[in-house]
Length: 350
Image 1 (tube, rainbow, N blue to C red):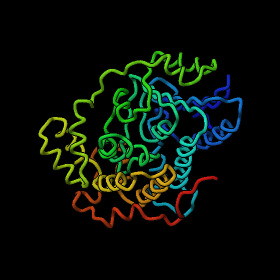
Image 2: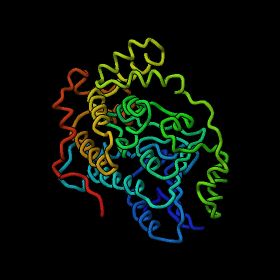
Image 3: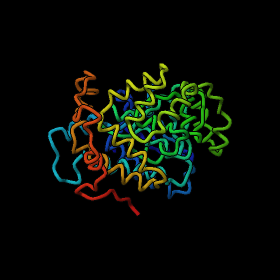
Image 4: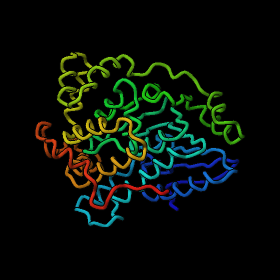
């Protein structure tokens, strides 16, 4: 067990609190290893009717995986051990994502704050995703030389009107109302009523009924006026065509979106667009297998380590990508990311 997570069972509810508020509840391998057996136990326990997961503190649900720790473990190279953190972390995280996806009981994730990367994986696969006016939701991986993982291949390819491709490539930050556009199955609850929701679930109120009792209209989001631009520009099959479409649009939103893409890892942009194409219709298991291939390809490359250095370590926000230009990222480099890693594909417990 680790002090960074609190797990308990009371009143027929399994409770998980991600408790690293100073680190915005970033997910570590010990936290993953604490959650997985708890979910197994609750799934088999007839006395447990639901699971509720939330973040400690007031700022975040979970700001993602502890990628700085992965950077530390892999920046000077890595051995062939399957237990090397650059393998073990992602292998066990992705298995946990699948476990949540297949969890047989209500799983209520309270996204009352920052929810990014690995935090999305802990929430979007559950039966009930609760967003509030404090929610800030994003998959920002192309800014650090990575790609949207934790099952993003499965859920982003199911977003309407090419919104998933937009989110995957740009890392755009969504407010609570915007999350509902990307995930019509989510629910909006005012932050002040989250405590009431938890109390109702603990009192035995069926989850759907408890959510309906405190739910509210989310109000207008920020993406609404730009949905036509997103749908039109991100429908294209190559990164160059997307950039050209944004340039032709002429509006401020399109110009800012294009400028943002030009600062992302060129390799990540190509890999992510191919990920979105290949991900169409995949099961959660097949999506995670593909993502494990991709992440190991990134661990063998340059841009992830450079991206973390620029964004989280030195914080100069001036990454030196290799290759530096989109036209230098050829199909061979992209295809290399989709190859089976030397240690073999990701597998799942039966």
